[in-house]
Image 1 (cartoon, helix red, strand yellow):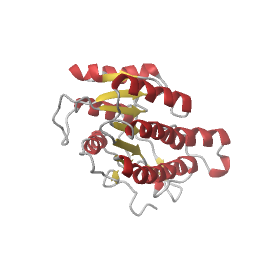
Image 2 (cartoon, helix red, strand yellow):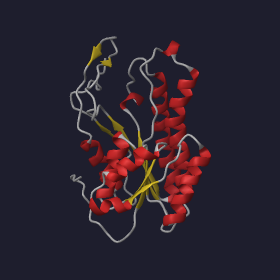
Image 3 (cartoon, helix red, strand yellow):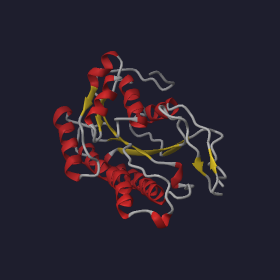
Image 4 (cartoon, helix red, strand yellow):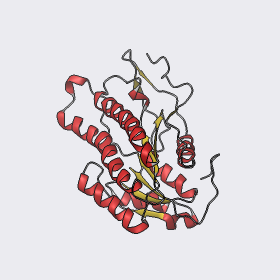
Amino acid sequence: MKGWCDVVRTAVVKTAVVTGAGSGIGRACALGLLADGWTVVLTGRREERLRESAALAEGGDRDRAVVLPADVTDAESVDALFAAVLERWGRLDLLFNNAADVMPYTPTEDVGTADWHRVMDSIATGTFLCSRAAFRIMKAQTPRGGRIINNGAPSAQAPRPDSIAFTAAKHAVAGITRSLSLDGRRHSISCGQIDIGNVTPADRPQPAVRQSDGSLRVEPTMDIRHVVDMVRAMAALPDGVNIQSVLVMPSAMPYVGRG
């Protein structure tokens, strides 16, 4: 998997954790980081899907793909994951907070409490728990510091109808990103966010999406490689340099002036 941000491989082991690495954006970005020479811990709840992701790595890259299942909504599971990372490699250089549970578009008055908590826990609480664990490692290691990349969403700026749980969770991620950026300064920890527009589905036709006027429309999409290239570029930045926030989207996607 090649892109415009290919980096020179070195003998230094650089370790990354990618959550939600069993499918979609997490899988693709994990493979992209492996291609750039990172040792990548692929994590998520379904071990078989994680192993499928690792098996897609090319050649020697597969040797640096490590499967460690964890539930990002569970504090003990998250702490055990990062303890294993620390024990095995002695440091953590990159965390990509990508894991998320979603739900069908649902009118606000019909959203169940259990669905609300499931979406919020997987996105907001999961991002917090993993970032907290990463901070503890990054501030104490030598050399000190590291990088956190959060997967946000355009919905945090311009929500879609009937998406209150997802929208609220992604607003929380935006706040977490800003707090991590501020709190990380004194520890040489950088934090940035990538907001991702419509990605072409890999295994099904693009569905019609609810618009603000109530209509349904099939929107333009982009290839996932553009997302991967941006995450690779953010990960490859030198210490002390950060992309605070970036939106990657199809140019024709109805976002600017949505509605």
